[in-house]
Length: 337
Image (cartoon, rainbow, N blue to C red; front, side):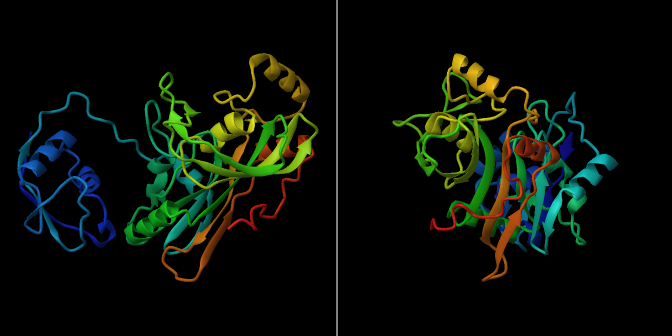
């Protein structure tokens, strides 16, 4: 199969995007390895100039893509059409919307993006949230599949860039709610423990003082049910993979209920703790929820976004079973700069 010469003008909404991502969307038949090769040879150009995969494209400029040959694929990836159920779902999750930002309350069990054996995810449903100009919102950050709560979407490239810079600068307050077991010995504090991917299990993160990346999490115990469990608020000041789960289990010594990957104590102790909670009507899920996010508005100077995601019915059931206040409204970190 042969592709013809293309000269494509960069749209306003694509301004600032990395060239490699833009090519993936606008020239989907071109394999990434071939795109790299053509860029090295100077055959893909923007405004007549050589480019690299990481080059940021500029609205209004022309990108030249030369003719190329691609062998017919024997197994073409099947594009999954949005079902009415998916459209209804993603629209029902919206808890905030303006011209620049959408916030959703992501449910437990729904992935943020696709992966191995995952074709139903938030990213695939965003087409249902496009604006009147046909611009599809884009993810600003992700939540684990088993974590529910606030997720932000940008409605333009400029908003996405501004939000991304806010997250990188740590100018964002993210408050997570969790139920942990056992109750932490210290009722508030900071967990400073560097995190790295485990060499034995690439899907698991561990604390490694020598080679790990800097990670900081603030925590505050809001209520406790004896020593068995506690309602804890977490504020991850950095954004490492599984940070709260790792810091809770390995740094604080208290596992998040429902977390089988990161356990704070040995198997025998786990059995004793589980026995303390036996008979309680707790949700069969990870008890971690992205409750609230506070940050400067990406496009409206001086305005602040402050978005709260309600607990789902399953977590409300758990909070009630343990006697915790699921309507708690305070910010336990308001005095931390």
